Image (tube, rainbow, N blue to C red; front, side, top):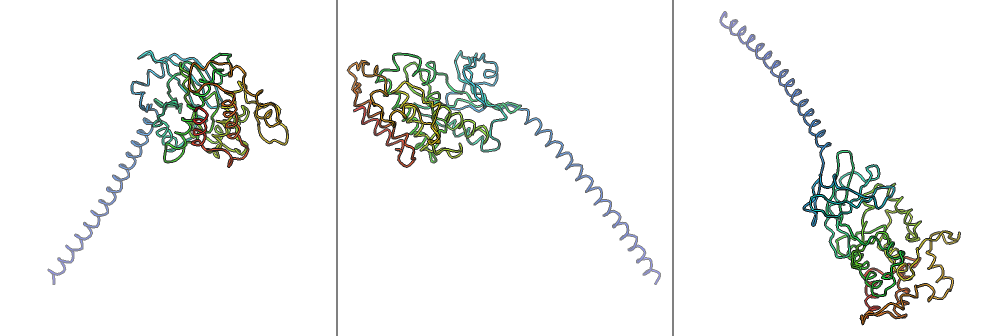
Length: 358
């Protein structure tokens, strides 16, 4: 009986001891886990803080020689400004190459993963009539820079209106028309999903020394937030390139790009700016002045520069004739139809242009 009592006492003490040990083990385990979790959070915060201060340079084909220091230290000349950014002509010190730098204001750019996806998409676009994206730089304070080649002839709007005799030469007018259309065709049909330009105008067509055209700014509205992209659309409307059905930039489509292309074709053959400073109340949209004249029944011969007919054909197969100029005018007017359904698609535009050149 005594032995039995002793056994019970021993077992009781052992159970109590084990319980105390278990409680202490759980207490210290939870304490240690909490400390580890706190350290992990602190380490993560520190890591994120470091990442937020890092710089990022993405290079694409043709921009392999770019460096962050070369981009940021390049002497630059401002050649264009808008509400959402600034354009610079910059000299890369490393290889003495001129580049076009586009600075996007942080407050105007889109946020999230979609921005990076768009950059990767635009960086892969390559065509003889499209301005390539060579590199993209994201700075520690949200600044963003897009790097492009620099084209010495400037933009098409300047070329048309600077009095240069070359701008009145049919062979160059026709070549530029074909080049712009081919570039737009690649954007509309060369990918699984069409890339909509959204802001096509003569200022966004650049020329090299041989007057070869390159479309710039395609897809730029996809990098901007809703407010900035809408401001872009309003500027396009004021310049005379906005399709009548386009209310918001997010609704830009292949048909609205075709409308803008038609306005550019009219610019090429008329030499006039498409700005309508006094639209009539019943129009509801900007109608380019030279289009208004055509609609009101003015002689079509008054709508293009007579100097074009006097330009030398140099034995070129695409020699100038009044018939060809009129066909180009008619094509441009069809592209500018108020009804999107009546506008040709880009492949039909190219077929018609090729027919004009025969």
